[in-house]
Every structure is written in structure tokens, then in C-alpha cells.
Length: 398
Ligand code: AMP
Image 1 (cartoon, rainbow, N blue to C red):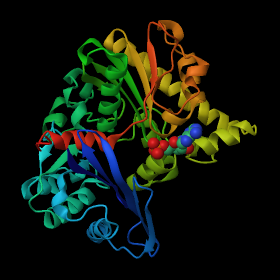
Image 2 (cartoon, rainbow, N blue to C red):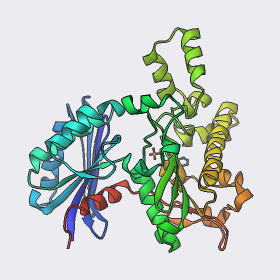
Image 3 (cartoon, helix red, strand yellow):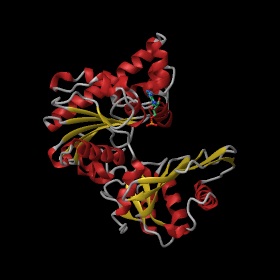
Image 4 (cartoon, protein in one colour):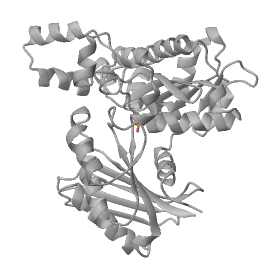
């Protein structure tokens, strides 16, 4: 048994978990949020019920990392840094450079920051800074970059290429990369384990429905298509992002409203989706509450969200010429039986069904009736464990 650390740095947050492998047993977890402001929050919670919560002035990611290590020792989660056998860092964009996890050295950090930063400007540079701090603090511990795009790297050209002049792909890397790969990988693997069937005999549609949302078609263990694209803007309707939209409409609106490209991109990324349609919130719980109270735009936002997911399920049934399992995960997918029921109720033509009693859960479960031709599952995602599994490939845990 060895202790692995999984690290997930966002643009203004740093989430971490210490996990015993191969048991996948989390012994401590926490986060540092909103750095740069006076009221940054530090949280640490271990599996013995001890909690540390502090409001601090944390100016950047490097300081957040120092604080994390200081508190891991102070709270006696670890006695010394030698106990950590490996670290896995989530990286949003790996482009075409990394189709698998990779051991981190200074050159890898440079590539993630300089060469791939343009594909995920809010995430990759921050993640590279965190890696640098970790390399400094734990110079002798193997550290692994785990890419959100890697699971999608098996997509065939037919599905990753846009119908643009081909040389734009060659010159600028203009193609679909996909995101949320670590989550799609975890839930498709769990689906195969729960159903007791090998991955290479399954056609699975995975639906990661959180504030960001994407669906993926996984055939014989390999991604054949996914709904997010060059960036995480397209596909289904999301909390604040549009999902699929006619690009000419974007040009038309820019002209009509005299908007700059930055202003328009801000609208498409941060003011659209559930928030833009409902005018209430980007948070699905609040949209559903307003819908219950009779708010028409909130009801419309909910219906559009469900409709776009159904469209992608139909799309992927056709892409794979069949489906054995549909799996829901992430904030909305894991927690809302209503969303799962409403989605599946619109795609029963190929045999998908939800049993309302089995569906009344937030836990890992098969929620379709026994013997149904298509299994429907709820599988809470666990990206941290999937990241730790990737680290284990580089560290002997026996
Ligand atoms: P995530 O990005 O995975 O953390 O998911 C966040 C989204 O999950 C937000 O839109 C939340 O409103 C939504 N969510 C969390 N719990 C529920 C619930 N019980 N019902 C519906 N949506 C939920």
C-alpha cells in the first residue's frame, strides 16, 4: 500500500486528496479557494473526523501549495513528506502532444505552460505553476501529469475533425479535443465492473452533467466521440455556456450589438446556458426551484438542457450503431433522479428505461429495470481516484 496525492488546480482554486493505493482509500482531502483575495479559504479534512478551516490571505498558487504542506504536517495527516509515494496533477489540455499520462520534469512543465497554455488559458498555466511548486517541495517523488484530453485521444479523425480547410488542422491544431476525460474514463470503467462485462464488449454513453457538461461515446473501451470540442463551449447546454450554436449567429450578434470578440466570448462562456435562458441562475437546483414556482424561462432552461442531452444520446447511439449502457455522473447527473428520469423518458425507442424506485438514489447503482436491453446507471464520479490510478502506473505500490 502506498500514499498518492491527487492535485486538481483550477484558475482560482487548488483541490487535493491523499489516497491509499491500490485500495483507493482517501485519508485526507481539502481545498484552497479564491486566492489573491483577502478571504481565501483553506480546508483540510481527514478520515478520522479532524477538520481544519481557515480564512487567510493567500496571494497565489505557490503560496497555496506551501500552506497545504505545512498543514498536512501540523494536522498529523503525514509525519514527513517521504510518506507520499507519488503525485498526480490534473491538466486540462494535453493537445495532440500527450495522449497518455506522463512523468513530469521541467520540460513537461514548460510544454504544458508555453505550448499548450493557449488551449486552456485559465487552467494550464496555473496547473504548471502548481507543478513547479510541487517539484520544488517533493524533488524525489514521481509526479505525473494526467490530461483531461487523454481519454479522448482515441477518437477517429472522422469525429475529431471539423469541416474546415484541412490545413487549419495541420497548422493550428484546429480540431475537437474534448474535456472531462478523467471523469468519463472513471465512470465507463466502473460501468464495466458493475455490469461484470469487459470494456471491449460494451458500447457506453457517459453523461457528465455538472456546471460544465459533456457526453461521450465509448466503444470497446475507446472514446469514439465526445460533445465538447476545441474548447469546452460546445455540445449540450451548460450552466453558463451555450453548447452548440450557429457561428454565423455569433457574427451577426457581434455586428448588431457592436461587440468585440472578447465581449462576445464572455457572453457565450459566462452569460449563456441555464443562466442566460432562465435569467435566474446557472445553478440547476435554483433553476429547478424557480421552475417549480411557475417561472416560464426557468422551465424552458430545464427543458432545453434535457432536450440537448437527448439529442446527443441519439447521436451517439447512431455513432456506435447501438448502445449497452447509459451512465450519469457529476453534480446534476449524480444528484437529480428527476433529470435522469426526464432524459431517459425521451429516448425509450431503443429500450432505455428507468425504474423510479431504483432511480431514487444518489449512490452508485443500476437504475434501469432488471433485464432491460439497455442498462442505465448512476455512478458518482471520482476523478481523484482515477488520477491516483494513473500515478500507480509509474510507482510500484506493492
Ligand atoms: P458540478 O459542476 O459537478 O459540481 O455540478 C454543479 C451542478 O450540480 C450545479 O448546477 C448544481 O445545482 C447541480 N446540483 C447539485 N445537486 C443537485 C440536485 N440535487 N439536483 C439538481 N442539480 C443539482
